[in-house]
Image (cartoon, helix red, strand yellow):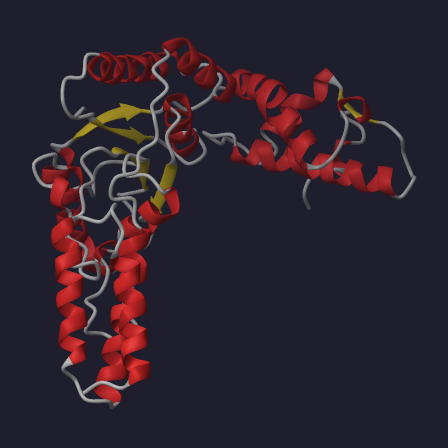
Length: 348
């Protein structure tokens, strides 16, 4: 028979499982695990099983089995969010507003579960793929979670590992749900074309299960070992190109091509979006730094062509950091960035 100490540990787990949010058959499964441990004599097998059961019960009681965020069903709000976060991209924004309109209409009319299409933003680095996914989450008022696929070489990273392994953990899908604390987040599958070659087929198989509405209401994580309903989540994917994405996955995606920015567009983005952000993040006031108009082309393209705005932002942020230091050290109170002095502020 188990000792008093063992019984106390098991009672703590049983108390934790008395959670009304948990599916009834999952509780029954967990209680069966407790009963199995009660039959084991004191020893290494008991304590190993207890640690595994305790870790598993911590996870299943922390997942959002019923919790959801309430959607913001306001297209004007969505337009404002998109315009505040992204310059231009009118075709992309219009498609997103159509996408959100369908979600809003179906939810207002309570037409069962809303099966949102999976948008896949394809474009070069720095063209705004990830940030536009965040904007969709913000526009709907949903939690946002990101799963990076760059260099991914093991499908267990997504699916988790069986509890028979001592160091087993859930996969990134389940970890993201726990962090989001809602069963209906916006889930960004970032750079799905950058999976490692030797795991491409198996990871694409997991993607099919995630993206297929006929399958993702019973997603299988090997650690949780119980079907998890992902059908109310909104999936968004990004890729640099589609050549390495399996046909079965492409069939479940709606590809939207992110355009490259012209120099004039990047200058507008730099002035209206990136500079205010950099000023805020470096603790400056807007009256402490100014830019001569002629300096913007030099900041925008210091090393040749760049499709996105990451280099531009790094340059602006570097300038703001160095101005901040001059102000803190008492060297300057206000700095005007000119063609003559800009090289003193750009990254080395």
